[in-house]
Length: 257
Length: 302
Image (cartoon, rainbow over all chains, first blue to last red; front, side, top):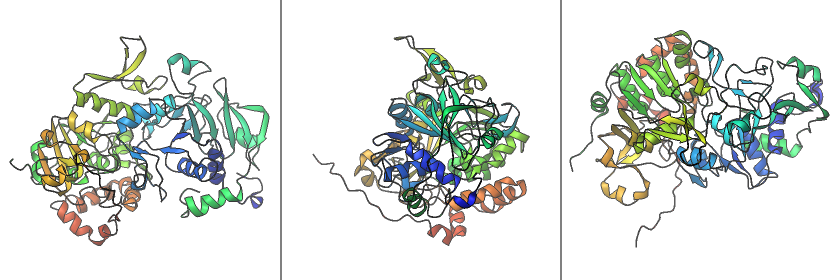
């Protein structure tokens, strides 16, 4: 990612984790996924958001995993959690009940309106690549107060329109979500290995570039003529304390960073 | 009361028939591979398999040619990539075409909840803006009779048989589960028959000492099977950890038809039952044994 990698003492994944952690506020309730989102939530809990509540779709509420969970149903999410409930409780009472402030999602494709595809590349009936499908992503996208997306940026992964909307963002414009009755606020930020995007009128706008990354790199790795904020910033680098926690406490085996 | 305790071979031959609709639930936790392997050994065909996360267990059943249709919401190898047997079936029709009926997790949970309550459908606030209803006509909308709000609706799911793994059960099928509960209770109540598979069979007095722990009551259970390590490579909280290394290995095994077949030959067709599988796994299972982390006992007295 960096034009001068010699200057950087952190990886793109570490920067993405730190940037995601900074979007989380103390006392919020987060619907967590495995991998980088899990690292971001646990980093935030150790720094500025000690009372962030982690909820996993597998049923663990207030999880406090002692090891890095390998799957979303890892037994370490159960041991010492505040509550373990059925999946009906998670989806009906917690998510549809409006308790989730922030949900993390990923996608093989994300488009200009923040729609995510985790279902198929190509035609649904005769797919070129069959992807896993929704899992809980569709309802998280519709019901969480806001959605954060972490995804490495490639031209193929960021087409103007996704092949299939598994999890709706702003669908096709500023008002469609609201008109269709979605109760959640939709995507708030997309964090890639090149920069961060926020949404204006339902459309992804580049609002910060990571240190060492260029607008040219961004444009070469996105499938439409992306709008750039007039107030474009440089993403803050990870602090040494953030890096220490990630490397020594959260992912000592370097599975994700 | 007469015992419902039988061997897995008999449970599968009595409660899983060609063409049946079967649900083997357990979200990452308590996935009963012992039952799936017996279904493969008995060469069942044309099954409709239902499960939120097909996981390795249905990948094996699909690649073995047992499955005609899959009803599901997330088909991946958790933490390790795709399910290649599933993908081969969908993308190339190998070993044969696989019909898909696809929801999201909440949609599947809602279907089983309706099925358990013997309601025709379940309403949920979901799917607006998603392409899922476009490719699955079973996802419809319904107007709330009180407010007029348009809601999504999914139909009840009532499988022929549910197979549910529990940490412990008595001989009558009263089954106690702790840790992740997934959608097992709904799946059991929704199905016409329920087979409980347990890590250990305990006296009824043990069940009665902690009644809040009973997830499935014996009154809806047709058969009980005792199968220690019956979930491996999945896990049983308090008994053994997930074999994460095997989930990673499965990526390589399932990628290649020949390796997939030789896995089945060795670990499914090559053993009589789960006991022989466990014996052959030997020391590699010992390393997965759970450490002790006891809850504080509660007082049920009055």
